[in-house]
Length: 242
Image (cartoon, rainbow, N blue to C red; front, side):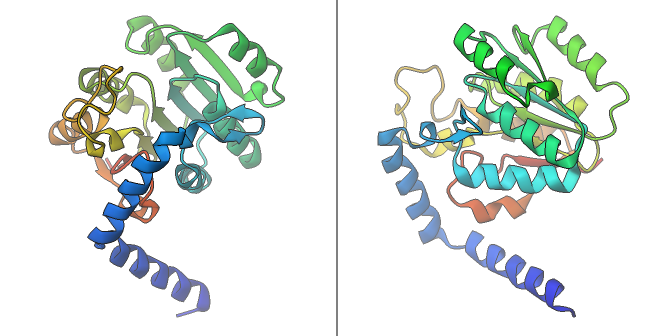
């Protein structure tokens, strides 16, 4: 075995062992809850735009984008636009591709900043309901003839909404590529934690993910993401295998 393969084998073993460490999992979740007191995920930017992500997830996303080399990334949820700028920057490094994103409300100040960004040449944005027939048809037209498509779902986090998203947007993911579903961690935060939001324990992306996987066997959870420990997407890195 050469040194590179030996390194990879050791890394896989470490990840597998770490994924079994229940004490570390609890410490990681406790840290996430404590850090959320300071809105931890709101405190980062990517190339000038706020990106509401754990840095660990950005690392995982870049690994997968570099591996798959998609020519289209579809995103639901735009907010400040950090995620779509992140995706566009990866496509720029790869040397081609488009980010197509939708949000129910693209605020004027965010739109202005995004349209002036040097990477906006790789982005198209739609304003509207991501579940609407009109928006789905727009994505279908863009996705036609694309060879490698990834999907990131990050809009409304209620069970019913996310399950509908999963059913609608999974059609775009090409075999060997990924559907990434953040905010599954809500299921593991204290009940009532999001007192001012419609989602909670038992009603969130994780519950929708479980329902989706029970009815759709085209996707599997990529356990390589177990290495993150601190993540917004527990079990949320889905690989299309057929």
